[in-house]
Image 1: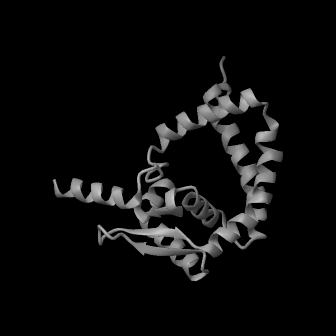
Image 2 (image 1 turned 60 degrees about the horizontal axis):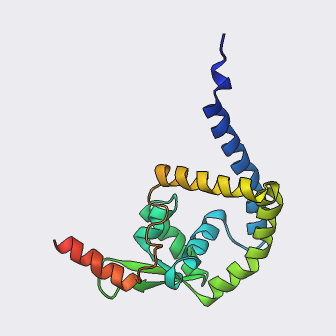
Image 3 (image 1 turned 90 degrees about the vertical axis):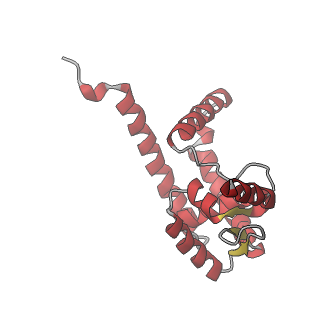
Length: 172
């Protein structure tokens, strides 16, 4: 008799969740040392990795696991802390950008060395280069299928050009 729990699909998801839980616990402790929650770190990192260190609020919500109201609350809190600011979209009054401030970039730069050390010690350092390349490829394919908006707004298009295109598309 076959045990349904021996199914490699269950094993794959279980290992993914276990790895995530272990890494998350390490990241949470390290981020707290720098006064950031995991979601604040995700927001500031996504913004810092985007053209102009900014994203439209709707794109930031699409990239994260947060709702648009959740992103608004996080950005409000981070704006009060001086880590982010909002910038109105000059071409679309309904859109605004979340932008990393100099203080936000400084906090991120202070946080990254320890974060990268954890990544190296507990994740990427556990894999040889070929295994890491294969994992990254597989994770991107899974991410693109399960969360297709994960890179919304992060292309190389200038944010103002994107806003112009978005406005034009809405008028049609």
